[in-house]
Image (cartoon, rainbow, N blue to C red; front, side, top):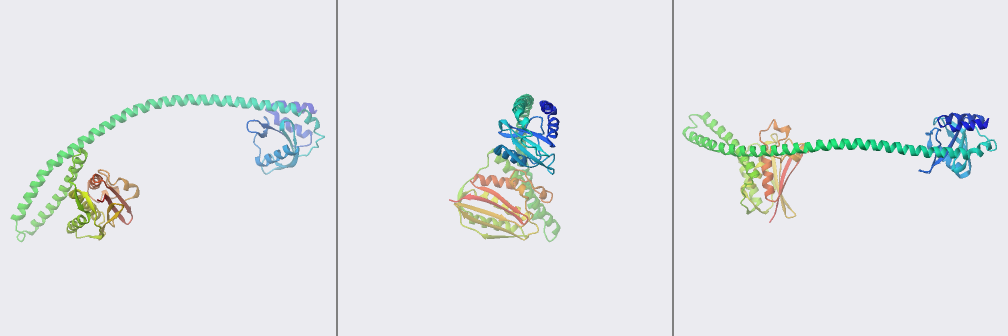
Length: 401
């Protein structure tokens, strides 16, 4: 009877069922054989037995104690973590362990099984080696198949990438040509507009002298408004011309030694006359000798102040200050207006860039800050902006002599 039950363990496909019958022969519920996996040096269920055991840590501790002491008795979970069964384990050949669940047979009772156990362990170990070898072969086959598919995909991607690079070069060249033509058009158009604007200004000045304000006050108001609009148009054209000069490398600078403190005071006085809505406050102004082009630096400060007034319509003051730190002077203009979202602050000095939130409300081409940044860079300085919900602070730095 025992021989036929043991013989049933030869069939790996039905091994666990045969092991259960063998366990019943010894008055137990289940029978397990665990052998050492040589690759990882850990006791694992032999092929044909359940490979996943509930609460593996508890099983591992039990089999380790059995391997050390030759025999171990206790409780083990099976077939689920909540079902604990009486368990006894015995150390077998080649550091294998046999475990009986649901009963405690005496060692003398299972002596015939232990005597033929070396043959079973040899069978199980050979199967494990064969299984591992086949698993490696299957894995290698899959890896080769995946590698072939990956290589084919990479070849296709390489072709597409090559085509994309060719198209990108064509697109880049086309964009460069378009940008060059656009700059040329802006330059020509700006120069062409200069003449009629100058003529119109002259006619308005003559008209202003001819018309007597007391006889026709509304006409005088219209002339003032027309002059103001012409001033805005002149500023836009000057910006377009400056951009063209920057890209053509034709922006001329006449550097001279000057005190930035005096320059700030002059520009603030000029801008303050043009606005009745804001008070421009100089909170701190240091004497700092710099080497610069006065007209261009005035242009930058004027732009910062004009923007501060423009984008803070509900505020009443603008703060400007200068400080020296490590042979560098920093000028900053602080407004109390709408602010700039953090993710868009890095783009405000780009050409034609306008913050979407304010573009619909405030007119402009988005060139003033771009030109200002280029002027400061040509002076060996830097520009930047800090902004929050309470307003913005634009600043530039310049080296001090």
